[in-house]
Length: 227
Image (tube, rainbow, N blue to C red; front, side, top):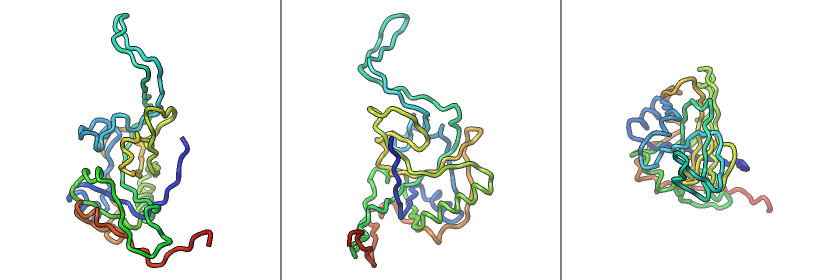
């Protein structure tokens, strides 16, 4: 799969009021484990049994046998392989892509946020300086001597894709999440928490119902590259 690079002008974290307040006022970064996302039962909103798998193999003419008797057949099937070192934690965010805004036009433009993402909680934290947010998390993780990676999530079609997977690959059924995430490898399966301090200077809290009201005003349009 060809990886793509995308620019973001804002991150959004959606959760309950208590968590959002803690994130904004204390910089509380709460990272669930890979196992949590594989086993959580929430009708597929966040849960993904194939979260963080290592490889996806497409199989044709698949049969399942019991004591020598074929009990099921399929023209095609998918086999997911585990990674021996897939223990770790994730911190996930909704990434608002810069391409959603026409920077060449002086105007007030509405930003569309996928409706399904609103099921994650009652409040949203708009992080309007994503670069600084990444820097603060990275700085603290380095101070804690933690290995980590940050990337957008690459979405694939599980019916056709065959190849390597990682914590940054997910089925395209979750594409509406427009996700970016931190991946922090660990030695044990548990929640990981740390603090980066108050981020009120780079964020703004809103009720979930106001996500549809987000607008961006382009005051000084950029010139077209061809002009």
